[in-house]
Amino acid sequence: MIYREVIQFLYDLRLFGAKFGLENTFKLAALAGNPQEKLRFIHVAGTNGKGSTCAMLESIYRAAGLRVGLFTSPHLVSFRERIQVNRQLVNESDVVRLLEEMQPWLEEFPKDHHPTFFEVVTVMALRYFAEKKCDLVIWETGMGGRFDATNIVVPLASVITNISFDHQQWLGDTLAKIAGEKAGIIKPGVPVVTTADAPEALAIIEETARRLNAPLVKAGETFRSSRAGSLTALSLAGKHQERNAAAAIAIVETLRRMIPVRDETIRIGLESVQWPGRLQVVKSKSGQTVLLDGAHNAAGADALRDALETYYPSAKPALILGVLEDKDWRHLCEALAPLATRILPASVNSERTTPPERLRDACAVANPAAQVTACPSLADALKEAADAPFVVITGSLYLVGEAMELLGLSPTTSEGERELNEWSAKK
Image 1 (cartoon, rainbow, N blue to C red):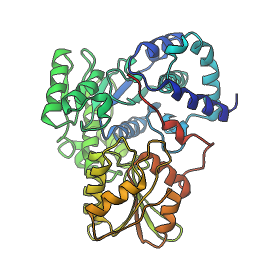
Image 2: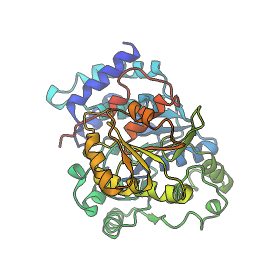
Image 3: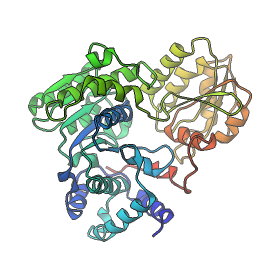
Image 4: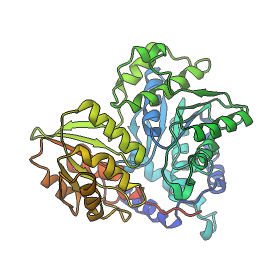
Protein backbone atom coordinates (compact mmCIF):
# COMPACT_ATOMS: atom_id res chain seq x y z
CA MET A 1 0.00 0.00 0.00
CA ILE A 2 0.97 3.63 -0.38
CA TYR A 3 -0.02 6.45 1.96
CA ARG A 4 -2.91 7.67 -0.22
CA GLU A 5 -4.36 4.14 -0.23
CA VAL A 6 -4.10 3.96 3.55
CA ILE A 7 -6.02 7.22 3.87
CA GLN A 8 -8.73 5.78 1.61
CA PHE A 9 -8.85 2.59 3.68
CA LEU A 10 -9.26 4.61 6.87
CA TYR A 11 -11.90 6.76 5.18
CA ASP A 12 -13.86 3.63 4.24
CA LEU A 13 -13.92 2.62 7.91
CA ARG A 14 -16.44 5.44 8.43
CA LEU A 15 -19.03 2.97 7.17
CA PHE A 16 -18.76 1.25 10.54
CA GLY A 17 -19.70 4.47 12.34
CA ALA A 18 -18.45 5.35 15.80
CA LYS A 19 -19.84 2.59 17.99
CA PHE A 20 -19.66 3.08 21.74
CA GLY A 21 -18.08 0.26 23.73
CA LEU A 22 -14.65 -1.13 24.52
CA GLU A 23 -14.92 -4.76 23.40
CA ASN A 24 -13.46 -4.22 19.93
CA THR A 25 -10.62 -2.04 21.15
CA PHE A 26 -9.62 -4.49 23.89
CA LYS A 27 -9.65 -7.34 21.35
CA LEU A 28 -7.68 -5.43 18.72
CA ALA A 29 -5.14 -4.28 21.31
CA ALA A 30 -4.75 -7.89 22.51
CA LEU A 31 -4.08 -9.05 18.94
CA ALA A 32 -1.44 -6.32 18.76
CA GLY A 33 0.22 -7.59 21.94
CA ASN A 34 -1.39 -5.11 24.36
CA PRO A 35 1.05 -2.26 23.70
CA GLN A 36 -0.77 -0.11 26.26
CA GLU A 37 0.74 -2.26 29.02
CA LYS A 38 4.21 -0.96 28.09
CA LEU A 39 3.24 2.69 28.40
CA ARG A 40 2.34 5.32 30.99
CA PHE A 41 -0.59 7.67 30.29
CA ILE A 42 -2.28 10.86 31.36
CA HIS A 43 -5.89 10.46 30.14
CA VAL A 44 -7.76 13.68 29.27
CA ALA A 45 -11.53 14.10 28.79
CA GLY A 46 -13.91 17.06 28.85
CA THR A 47 -16.03 19.20 26.55
CA ASN A 48 -13.69 22.10 25.75
CA GLY A 49 -10.01 22.54 26.50
CA LYS A 50 -8.97 18.90 26.13
CA GLY A 51 -6.57 19.55 23.27
CA SER A 52 -5.05 22.67 24.81
CA THR A 53 -4.54 20.89 28.14
CA CYS A 54 -2.92 17.97 26.31
CA ALA A 55 -0.62 20.35 24.45
CA MET A 56 0.40 22.02 27.72
CA LEU A 57 1.14 18.72 29.43
CA GLU A 58 3.13 17.51 26.43
CA SER A 59 5.17 20.73 26.37
CA ILE A 60 5.94 20.59 30.09
CA TYR A 61 7.04 16.96 30.12
CA ARG A 62 9.05 17.37 26.93
CA ALA A 63 10.80 20.36 28.55
CA ALA A 64 11.57 17.99 31.44
CA GLY A 65 13.48 15.74 29.05
CA LEU A 66 10.91 12.99 28.54
CA ARG A 67 10.01 11.35 25.25
CA VAL A 68 6.31 12.25 25.07
CA GLY A 69 3.62 10.74 22.88
CA LEU A 70 0.60 12.90 22.03
CA PHE A 71 -2.71 11.48 20.80
CA THR A 72 -5.42 14.00 19.93
CA SER A 73 -8.39 14.44 17.61
CA PRO A 74 -9.73 15.75 15.34
CA HIS A 75 -6.83 16.79 13.12
CA LEU A 76 -6.85 20.18 11.42
CA VAL A 77 -5.18 19.30 8.13
CA SER A 78 -3.16 16.08 8.20
CA PHE A 79 -4.22 12.76 9.71
CA ARG A 80 -0.65 12.49 11.02
CA GLU A 81 -1.36 15.28 13.54
CA ARG A 82 -3.24 12.74 15.64
CA ILE A 83 -0.12 10.73 16.52
CA GLN A 84 3.01 12.65 17.54
CA VAL A 85 6.19 11.96 19.50
CA ASN A 86 7.91 15.05 20.91
CA ARG A 87 5.64 17.06 18.58
CA GLN A 88 6.97 15.26 15.49
CA LEU A 89 4.12 13.92 13.38
CA VAL A 90 4.14 10.20 12.64
CA ASN A 91 5.79 9.56 9.27
CA GLU A 92 3.69 8.56 6.27
CA SER A 93 5.79 5.38 5.92
CA ASP A 94 5.02 4.42 9.53
CA VAL A 95 1.30 4.97 8.98
CA VAL A 96 1.44 2.63 5.99
CA ARG A 97 3.45 -0.01 7.85
CA LEU A 98 1.29 0.08 10.98
CA LEU A 99 -1.93 -0.34 9.03
CA GLU A 100 -0.53 -3.11 6.84
CA GLU A 101 0.53 -5.00 9.97
CA MET A 102 -2.93 -4.55 11.49
CA GLN A 103 -4.92 -5.82 8.51
CA PRO A 104 -4.64 -9.56 9.38
CA TRP A 105 -5.98 -8.76 12.86
CA LEU A 106 -8.94 -6.88 11.38
CA GLU A 107 -9.93 -10.07 9.57
CA GLU A 108 -10.47 -11.68 12.99
CA PHE A 109 -13.64 -9.60 13.43
CA PRO A 110 -17.05 -10.47 11.94
CA LYS A 111 -18.25 -8.00 9.33
CA ASP A 112 -21.12 -6.85 11.51
CA HIS A 113 -18.72 -6.03 14.36
CA HIS A 114 -15.75 -4.60 12.46
CA PRO A 115 -13.51 -2.11 14.29
CA THR A 116 -14.32 1.52 13.53
CA PHE A 117 -11.96 4.21 12.27
CA PHE A 118 -11.29 5.52 15.76
CA GLU A 119 -10.75 2.05 17.24
CA VAL A 120 -8.20 1.23 14.54
CA VAL A 121 -6.39 4.55 14.93
CA THR A 122 -6.35 4.18 18.73
CA VAL A 123 -4.54 0.85 18.57
CA MET A 124 -2.30 2.15 15.78
CA ALA A 125 -1.23 4.97 18.10
CA LEU A 126 -0.61 2.59 21.01
CA ARG A 127 1.66 0.44 18.85
CA TYR A 128 3.58 3.46 17.57
CA PHE A 129 4.12 4.94 21.03
CA ALA A 130 5.30 1.57 22.35
CA GLU A 131 7.71 1.19 19.41
CA LYS A 132 9.11 4.65 20.08
CA LYS A 133 9.51 3.76 23.78
CA CYS A 134 7.68 6.87 24.95
CA ASP A 135 8.25 7.73 28.60
CA LEU A 136 4.75 9.18 28.83
CA VAL A 137 1.71 9.46 26.56
CA ILE A 138 -0.75 12.36 26.73
CA TRP A 139 -3.94 10.57 25.73
CA GLU A 140 -7.05 12.53 24.68
CA THR A 141 -10.48 10.93 24.47
CA GLY A 142 -12.35 11.15 21.20
CA MET A 143 -15.87 11.74 22.53
CA GLY A 144 -17.29 11.13 25.97
CA GLY A 145 -15.06 8.85 27.99
CA ARG A 146 -16.80 5.85 29.50
CA PHE A 147 -17.18 3.94 26.21
CA ASP A 148 -14.51 5.84 24.26
CA ALA A 149 -11.89 3.59 22.63
CA THR A 150 -9.13 5.38 24.55
CA ASN A 151 -10.58 4.09 27.83
CA ILE A 152 -8.79 0.73 27.66
CA VAL A 153 -5.75 2.23 29.43
CA VAL A 154 -5.07 2.60 33.17
CA PRO A 155 -3.36 6.00 33.42
CA LEU A 156 -1.09 7.55 36.03
CA ALA A 157 -3.69 10.31 36.34
CA SER A 158 -6.88 11.51 34.65
CA VAL A 159 -8.01 15.00 33.69
CA ILE A 160 -11.57 16.20 33.13
CA THR A 161 -11.70 19.73 31.76
CA ASN A 162 -14.88 21.78 31.65
CA ILE A 163 -18.30 20.19 31.14
CA SER A 164 -20.74 21.92 28.81
CA PHE A 165 -23.25 20.99 26.15
CA ASP A 166 -21.95 19.19 23.07
CA HIS A 167 -22.81 15.86 21.39
CA GLN A 168 -26.03 15.73 23.44
CA GLN A 169 -27.54 13.13 21.14
CA TRP A 170 -24.84 10.69 22.29
CA LEU A 171 -23.73 11.87 25.72
CA GLY A 172 -27.01 13.04 27.22
CA ASP A 173 -29.16 16.15 27.40
CA THR A 174 -28.13 17.36 30.88
CA LEU A 175 -24.77 18.39 32.29
CA ALA A 176 -25.08 15.58 34.85
CA LYS A 177 -25.46 12.96 32.11
CA ILE A 178 -22.57 14.40 30.09
CA ALA A 179 -20.41 14.50 33.21
CA GLY A 180 -21.27 10.87 33.89
CA GLU A 181 -19.85 9.90 30.50
CA LYS A 182 -16.71 11.99 30.98
CA ALA A 183 -16.22 10.66 34.52
CA GLY A 184 -16.13 7.18 33.03
CA ILE A 185 -12.35 7.61 32.57
CA ILE A 186 -11.82 7.75 36.35
CA LYS A 187 -10.11 4.55 37.54
CA PRO A 188 -9.99 3.06 41.06
CA GLY A 189 -7.28 4.73 43.11
CA VAL A 190 -6.00 6.83 40.18
CA PRO A 191 -5.81 10.59 40.91
CA VAL A 192 -8.06 12.86 38.87
CA VAL A 193 -7.91 16.60 38.26
CA THR A 194 -10.88 18.63 37.05
CA THR A 195 -11.61 22.22 36.11
CA ALA A 196 -15.34 21.56 35.81
CA ASP A 197 -17.34 24.08 37.82
CA ALA A 198 -20.98 23.56 36.83
CA PRO A 199 -22.49 22.29 40.13
CA GLU A 200 -24.47 19.38 38.66
CA ALA A 201 -21.46 18.21 36.62
CA LEU A 202 -19.00 18.62 39.47
CA ALA A 203 -21.28 16.65 41.80
CA ILE A 204 -21.13 13.65 39.44
CA ILE A 205 -17.34 13.83 39.16
CA GLU A 206 -16.99 14.11 42.95
CA GLU A 207 -19.31 11.17 43.56
CA THR A 208 -17.49 9.00 41.00
CA ALA A 209 -14.08 9.82 42.45
CA ARG A 210 -15.33 9.12 45.99
CA ARG A 211 -16.84 5.79 44.97
CA LEU A 212 -13.64 4.69 43.25
CA ASN A 213 -11.34 6.04 45.96
CA ALA A 214 -9.67 8.25 43.36
CA PRO A 215 -8.01 11.37 44.87
CA LEU A 216 -9.68 14.43 43.33
CA VAL A 217 -8.14 17.87 42.80
CA LYS A 218 -10.38 20.77 41.72
CA ALA A 219 -7.96 22.96 39.79
CA GLY A 220 -10.09 25.82 38.51
CA GLU A 221 -8.52 28.50 40.67
CA THR A 222 -4.98 27.20 41.18
CA PHE A 223 -3.13 28.65 38.18
CA ARG A 224 -1.99 32.06 39.40
CA SER A 225 -1.89 30.90 43.02
CA SER A 226 0.71 28.23 42.19
CA ARG A 227 4.39 29.12 42.19
CA ALA A 228 4.82 28.08 38.56
CA GLY A 229 1.65 29.80 37.42
CA SER A 230 2.43 33.11 39.11
CA LEU A 231 5.63 33.39 37.06
CA THR A 232 4.21 32.18 33.76
CA ALA A 233 3.21 34.14 30.67
CA LEU A 234 1.03 31.67 28.76
CA SER A 235 1.78 31.40 25.06
CA LEU A 236 -1.85 30.44 24.37
CA ALA A 237 -4.19 33.43 24.44
CA GLY A 238 -7.51 33.61 26.25
CA LYS A 239 -8.67 33.65 29.85
CA HIS A 240 -10.00 30.11 29.43
CA GLN A 241 -6.44 28.88 28.85
CA GLU A 242 -5.59 29.78 32.44
CA ARG A 243 -8.04 27.11 33.59
CA ASN A 244 -6.42 24.60 31.24
CA ALA A 245 -3.02 25.60 32.58
CA ALA A 246 -4.34 25.12 36.13
CA ALA A 247 -5.27 21.55 35.23
CA ALA A 248 -1.85 20.90 33.69
CA ILE A 249 0.00 22.29 36.71
CA ALA A 250 -2.17 20.30 39.11
CA ILE A 251 -1.42 17.07 37.22
CA VAL A 252 2.32 17.74 37.20
CA GLU A 253 2.27 18.48 40.94
CA THR A 254 0.17 15.38 41.62
CA LEU A 255 2.67 13.16 39.78
CA ARG A 256 5.85 14.85 41.03
CA ARG A 257 6.91 11.93 43.22
CA MET A 258 6.72 9.63 40.20
CA ILE A 259 7.94 12.10 37.54
CA PRO A 260 9.96 14.96 39.07
CA VAL A 261 9.43 18.30 37.32
CA ARG A 262 10.80 21.62 38.56
CA ASP A 263 8.69 24.80 38.69
CA GLU A 264 11.04 26.39 36.16
CA THR A 265 10.37 23.52 33.75
CA ILE A 266 6.61 24.02 34.13
CA ARG A 267 7.07 27.69 33.31
CA ILE A 268 9.17 26.93 30.23
CA GLY A 269 6.64 24.37 29.04
CA LEU A 270 3.65 26.70 29.40
CA GLU A 271 5.42 29.66 27.81
CA SER A 272 6.51 27.66 24.76
CA VAL A 273 3.43 25.50 24.10
CA GLN A 274 1.89 25.69 20.63
CA TRP A 275 -1.62 24.58 19.67
CA PRO A 276 -2.74 25.75 16.20
CA GLY A 277 -6.26 26.88 15.44
CA ARG A 278 -7.07 28.12 18.92
CA LEU A 279 -7.01 31.94 19.02
CA GLN A 280 -4.17 31.72 16.51
CA VAL A 281 -3.27 35.09 15.01
CA VAL A 282 -1.41 35.32 11.70
CA LYS A 283 -0.50 38.08 9.26
CA SER A 284 -1.21 37.50 5.59
CA LYS A 285 1.19 38.60 2.87
CA SER A 286 -1.05 41.62 2.28
CA GLY A 287 -0.76 42.68 5.92
CA GLN A 288 -4.24 41.47 6.87
CA THR A 289 -4.61 40.16 10.43
CA VAL A 290 -6.39 36.80 10.56
CA LEU A 291 -7.54 35.12 13.76
CA LEU A 292 -8.34 31.39 13.58
CA ASP A 293 -10.32 29.72 16.34
CA GLY A 294 -12.19 26.43 16.35
CA ALA A 295 -15.08 27.67 18.50
CA HIS A 296 -17.43 24.85 17.54
CA ASN A 297 -19.90 24.88 20.45
CA ALA A 298 -21.57 27.32 22.82
CA ALA A 299 -18.78 27.36 25.41
CA GLY A 300 -16.17 27.84 22.69
CA ALA A 301 -18.12 30.72 21.15
CA ASP A 302 -18.41 32.43 24.53
CA ALA A 303 -14.66 32.04 25.11
CA LEU A 304 -13.91 33.52 21.67
CA ARG A 305 -16.28 36.43 22.27
CA ASP A 306 -14.61 37.17 25.62
CA ALA A 307 -11.16 36.98 24.02
CA LEU A 308 -12.11 39.35 21.21
CA GLU A 309 -13.59 41.83 23.69
CA THR A 310 -10.42 41.58 25.81
CA TYR A 311 -7.69 41.70 23.16
CA TYR A 312 -9.47 43.67 20.42
CA PRO A 313 -12.00 45.86 22.28
CA SER A 314 -12.33 48.47 19.52
CA ALA A 315 -11.96 46.18 16.51
CA LYS A 316 -14.90 45.27 14.30
CA PRO A 317 -13.69 42.30 12.29
CA ALA A 318 -15.05 40.63 9.23
CA LEU A 319 -16.42 37.36 10.57
CA ILE A 320 -16.22 34.19 8.47
CA LEU A 321 -18.41 31.60 10.13
CA GLY A 322 -18.97 27.96 9.22
CA VAL A 323 -20.67 25.51 11.58
CA LEU A 324 -21.72 21.88 11.53
CA GLU A 325 -25.48 21.39 11.70
CA ASP A 326 -25.35 19.15 14.77
CA LYS A 327 -23.79 21.98 16.77
CA ASP A 328 -25.60 24.85 18.50
CA TRP A 329 -25.06 27.15 15.53
CA ARG A 330 -27.76 29.57 16.65
CA HIS A 331 -25.81 30.31 19.85
CA LEU A 332 -22.64 30.86 17.83
CA CYS A 333 -24.45 33.42 15.69
CA GLU A 334 -25.93 35.16 18.73
CA ALA A 335 -22.57 35.30 20.54
CA LEU A 336 -20.31 36.35 17.67
CA ALA A 337 -22.38 38.29 15.11
CA PRO A 338 -22.72 41.44 17.29
CA LEU A 339 -18.93 41.84 17.28
CA ALA A 340 -18.59 42.16 13.49
CA THR A 341 -19.35 44.78 10.86
CA ARG A 342 -19.31 42.26 8.02
CA ILE A 343 -20.36 38.62 8.35
CA LEU A 344 -19.65 35.95 5.76
CA PRO A 345 -21.33 32.63 6.60
CA ALA A 346 -19.73 29.84 4.58
CA SER A 347 -20.22 26.15 3.95
CA VAL A 348 -17.93 23.81 5.84
CA ASN A 349 -16.44 21.10 3.65
CA SER A 350 -18.58 18.46 5.36
CA GLU A 351 -21.81 16.65 4.66
CA ARG A 352 -22.94 17.92 8.07
CA THR A 353 -22.50 21.61 7.28
CA THR A 354 -25.15 24.12 8.25
CA PRO A 355 -26.34 25.84 5.05
CA PRO A 356 -24.79 29.33 4.99
CA GLU A 357 -28.23 30.80 4.27
CA ARG A 358 -29.42 29.67 7.72
CA LEU A 359 -26.37 31.21 9.34
CA ARG A 360 -26.97 34.39 7.33
CA ASP A 361 -30.52 34.72 8.60
CA ALA A 362 -29.55 34.03 12.23
CA CYS A 363 -26.64 36.49 12.08
CA ALA A 364 -28.84 39.18 10.53
CA VAL A 365 -31.22 38.87 13.49
CA ALA A 366 -28.34 38.97 16.00
CA ASN A 367 -26.75 42.01 14.33
CA PRO A 368 -29.15 43.91 12.02
CA ALA A 369 -26.52 46.59 11.37
CA ALA A 370 -23.98 44.19 9.87
CA GLN A 371 -23.54 43.42 6.19
CA VAL A 372 -24.25 39.68 5.94
CA THR A 373 -23.46 37.70 2.77
CA ALA A 374 -23.81 33.92 2.47
CA CYS A 375 -20.88 32.27 0.69
CA PRO A 376 -20.86 28.82 -0.93
CA SER A 377 -17.31 28.09 0.29
CA LEU A 378 -14.52 29.33 2.51
CA ALA A 379 -12.51 30.31 -0.56
CA ASP A 380 -15.38 32.57 -1.66
CA ALA A 381 -15.63 34.09 1.82
CA LEU A 382 -11.90 34.84 1.87
CA LYS A 383 -12.22 36.63 -1.48
CA GLU A 384 -15.12 38.70 -0.11
CA ALA A 385 -13.04 39.63 2.94
CA ALA A 386 -9.84 40.37 1.03
CA ASP A 387 -10.01 44.10 1.78
CA ALA A 388 -10.81 43.74 5.50
CA PRO A 389 -7.91 44.63 7.83
CA PHE A 390 -9.01 42.09 10.47
CA VAL A 391 -10.71 38.77 9.77
CA VAL A 392 -11.94 36.14 12.25
CA ILE A 393 -12.44 32.60 10.91
CA THR A 394 -14.34 30.36 13.29
CA GLY A 395 -17.22 27.98 13.98
CA SER A 396 -15.66 24.62 13.19
CA LEU A 397 -12.22 23.06 13.42
CA TYR A 398 -12.92 21.67 9.96
CA LEU A 399 -13.21 25.24 8.65
CA VAL A 400 -10.05 26.28 10.49
CA GLY A 401 -8.14 23.37 8.96
CA GLU A 402 -9.28 24.34 5.48
CA ALA A 403 -8.28 27.95 6.19
CA MET A 404 -4.80 26.86 7.22
CA GLU A 405 -4.34 25.18 3.85
CA LEU A 406 -5.82 28.07 1.84
CA LEU A 407 -3.72 30.64 3.73
CA GLY A 408 -0.53 28.63 3.26
CA LEU A 409 -0.11 27.99 6.99
CA SER A 410 0.02 24.25 6.49
CA PRO A 411 1.18 22.09 3.59
CA THR A 412 -1.63 20.79 1.42
CA THR A 413 -2.20 17.13 2.24
CA SER A 414 -3.33 14.21 0.15
CA GLU A 415 -6.94 14.38 -0.92
CA GLY A 416 -9.34 13.32 1.78
CA GLU A 417 -7.27 13.73 4.94
CA ARG A 418 -9.47 16.43 6.45
CA GLU A 419 -12.53 14.37 5.47
CA LEU A 420 -11.31 11.62 7.83
CA ASN A 421 -12.84 13.71 10.62
CA GLU A 422 -16.29 12.79 9.30
CA TRP A 423 -18.17 10.09 11.18
CA SER A 424 -21.67 8.93 12.02
CA ALA A 425 -22.15 7.51 15.49
CA LYS A 426 -23.94 4.24 16.17
CA LYS A 427 -25.00 3.27 19.65
